[in-house]
Amino acid sequence: MLLPSPLTVSRAVQLPPEMAGKRAPAAPRDAALRLRTAGRRDALTALYEAEFGHRSAAEILNRRAESGEVEGEPLGFARALIALVEERRPSIDASLMRLAPAFPLATLTHIDRTILRAGLAEVVHSRAAAPAEALAAWTALARTYSGEPARKLVSGVLGTAHREGSTASAERDGGATDE
Image (tube, rainbow, N blue to C red):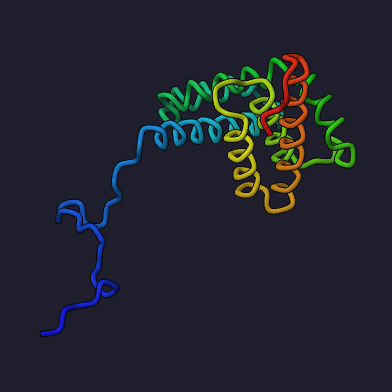
């Protein structure tokens, strides 16, 4: 009698029949990441709509929350991010003009400008998530909502801002950067 070779034996774990076709629940860290990602997307939507000048982003987000479109932890994350962007918009815009002089804010599309503002606010001014996580998330949002050229722009601008911030904090603390 021939025994199957170890290479032909399947080592896949069989799920119970009631779980067939379903994914296993995500780890808590992944769940928190998903909640922050949803909050970023909700903030982006409200900030983008506010670019057209009819209402503030906070009013837009509140309207969406009242209608049940946004709720829970993503709502809290989005509110904090919107408040940060609106509070620091002049300094964020000044930083964007310095970091991307070849792309004046007035010439950027509404969505690109909104992604850059929100991304810079989170990467530089927020402690809600690690800067590397925020940078990756905003780069992914740029790819999704604007395309590959915007992804490169967002990645370059936010990456430079993060490196400058890391260098400045290391110099302030008297140590080396963690990169």
